[in-house]
Amino acid sequence: VIIVAYHKVNQYAEQAAARGAMEPILALWVPLFALSALIFWMYHVLAHRPGGQPIGALERAASQVAKSFRKLLPKVRSA
Image (cartoon, rainbow, N blue to C red; front, side, top):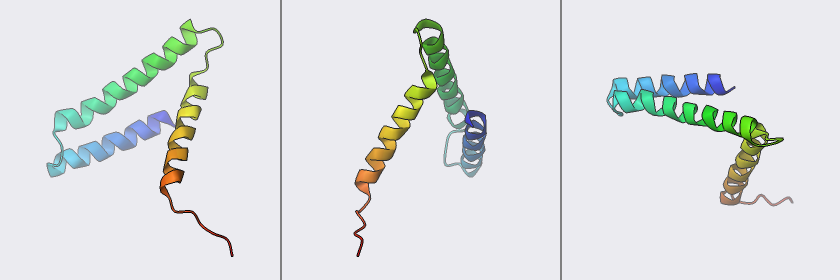
């Protein structure tokens, strides 16, 4: 999933750079550095924390982001 998401981000960045909306160097290198940082962090958690599960931390972070988005949405009342 991470590789597919990275590929899609690169496709978007390439198209944005072709339109002139973004600087080409930044558009393609920033996602690479972000992915590299994520991979390094995941390796660090697995290698240096006993019982470390980086996927669990990513799930908790995604849950917090989803909760924040749900707070922004209007509540639907049932009739």
